[in-house]
Image 1 (cartoon, each protein chain N blue to C red):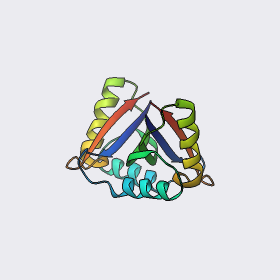
Image 2: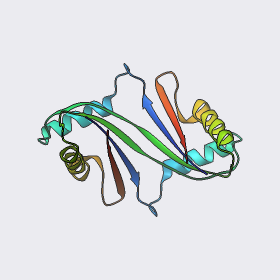
Image 3: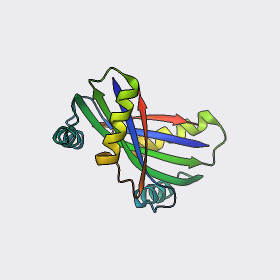
Image 4: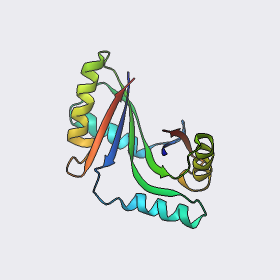
Length: 79
Length: 79
């Protein structure tokens, strides 16, 4: 079973990486680019076969390791 | 119009971040975690209103700035 986790800075938290990308795109001539946010994506292969159990386990991984929940939000997709 | 870009290391390219996450999860007691790959996700707000044009523009951004196509692959989603 595969899981995909997105970890993004929460809305309102300054995102210097996103700002740098936005600025660089502007300098390169790409127009009409508004807000840019950059985050992490983590893909995991899991031995679990139960979708609900896998989702609960991955959420626990996010809370304990993958995301800093003070400033980051995460979403979990199980496929 | 919003675009979401995923940039991942190509298959076969060593992913030290993913290996570190896998190792840390193992040490924390999460069992049954196989391969882990970590990449970037970039969310952009675009002024473009035509979906095909927006997708073409974002692919150009990936080729020129967002991805290192020697070792990274990317996918573009337009929403």
